[in-house]
Image (cartoon, rainbow, N blue to C red; front, side, top):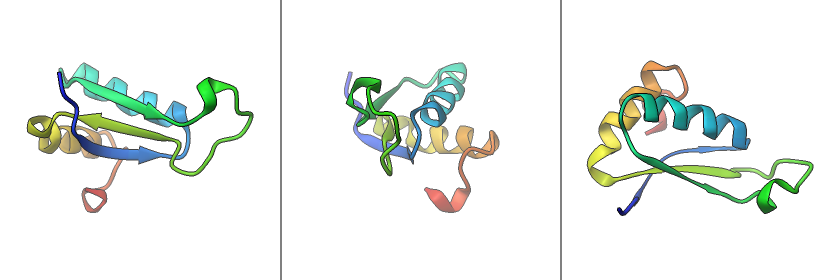
Length: 76
């Protein structure tokens, strides 16, 4: 399975996990790319977590996150 599109980027991992849960509930497979030293950093780096989806799922994923109030339509 190939995840090729960035649907959203977050400064904190927990925000990305929350968004991933919304996509999961909507039946959209997603994957997190996280740069937090495996959770060992005591602080968050800017744009720490990137939420990825398949290209075909990108429009629907954006809509799900927009409906949930996680991202604005302009963030796409």
